[in-house]
Length: 327
Image (cartoon, rainbow, N blue to C red):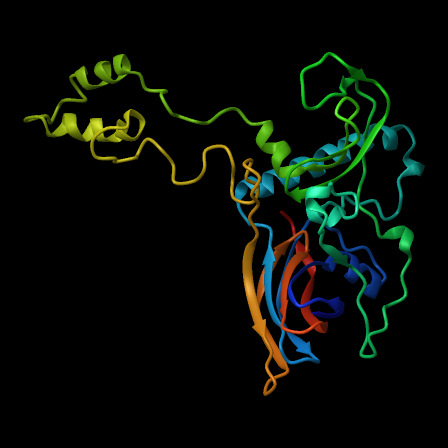
């Protein structure tokens, strides 16, 4: 196990959001590469607040097959982008070559548009008992960059046939919409949402109206389908499967999954995002130290929501298993 301590300064009254990046902190402390695109186990830890009033909620990216598929797709495409270069020039491969996406689009402050001006600070450098940050190399604390020279429509809002064939570069994040900058006719990507990109690459799985009345009549007229039909009960059972599509009668709903058809948990295409709450801690005047339970975090990145009744700072110590698990 490895303990990592972070001091979160300049917290304002009310809610504050910050992201802790454990793989970078592990790399700094242990002087060896800890890869970002893994599932890290946090065994627990504690919160210390000098003002005795902090309430902290810990959240991570949702851990489901869609989020993992989006993450692996982004990682594999980034590696493929470099593969030809390294194949022809293996000596060019950097020693600390690793795919490092952000957890949230909100971490790309101050490049966020005006409507998202309040971004999340990313804390990646651990500190000691005196709140002194560990020595580090700022050049090694970066997000991975995608680079393309493919021609594409430069206007991302309308379908005007304007093509930009110049090099484009962007970082990436797991949760949230694509981030762009520039004028309406010359927009470029700043950071690409891996989950949104994965959703956009998928076929439409919406089953609404996929079963027509003619198809339903053919199914219900099949002799084997009606093998045990002693009356109208079986007809009603089959009809109920499709009522949610037809919109009448009792809604059996078995033609639909309970999950959203096009937006998996973690990245809603209607503008909302979803982070999975994992633990919580609260300090009081009687108990200025509060312990929290363990959990797992994809990318080793944790979103903290810190509620303060007065401005100040908090110390958070994580007990981390440095050997992340493959996704």
